[in-house]
Image (cartoon, rainbow, N blue to C red; front, side, top):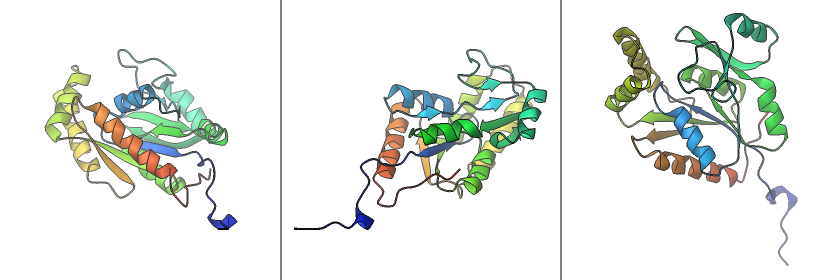
Length: 210
């Protein structure tokens, strides 16, 4: 009879994953996460707190938790954010307790942050899965940014595009790079599904330490 030692015996259920999705502004992070939800993949999405104004169609505590600068600074003072940063003159932060609670309950967790935030999280939680989302081309990114906010000035658009170019050269914190082509978000989601399925089959699984 073949005996399998406890050391090499695989767990019946893989531990929960913490997935960090990042990329330049306009890469399609929100749309990709929404499509992941629709695809049937079960996960807890951590709603980021931010001081930026709501965009048309956004819902408080669904897309972001919209708060004032004063409220944000109070949260920072209590050290309840896993990471926080100032991006385009607005503050963004990831609630620490929400991440810990979801992981402790056995749920996979998805966090969406900018590239600066992903770099910070890589230092704090290197065991997480870091996915960098990019458009197929700079032309496509320019089109997306124009469609998303027709009221932004030419200088604002130029600032975002220049920052995007810089961010697309910072790949060292990431485990995977996924191209998100125009009008084919299903392909993007299928690639992320494949990444997460492979991660669930690791012989030495990632164990989140918070």
